[in-house]
Image (cartoon, rainbow, N blue to C red; front, side, top):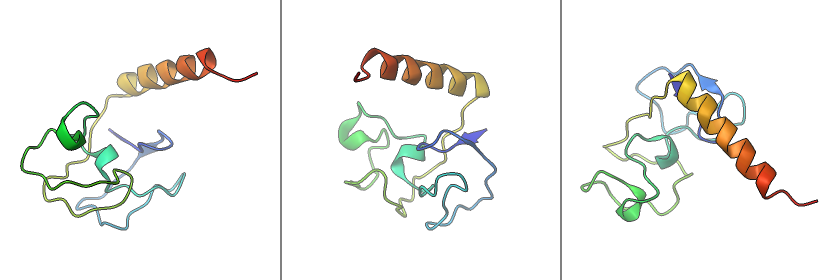
Length: 94
């Protein structure tokens, strides 16, 4: 199951994914590092694939040859959404 990194909505994707493909809900580009299974905030250059090119803006579309859309289970997505909501509640401004 695939989800948009930006709005977290479930996606129905046809592969291969074109560089200009956007989320039907929020309009965010889909072929971006933040949607890739190799993306990791903690990895060097935020990518777990050592041979991947350095892409400075992780939200911009790219043609990285290692791009593979990240798959998540619905339960994972629900846990992630709950954690984000709790985090936002904890630090909300009054």
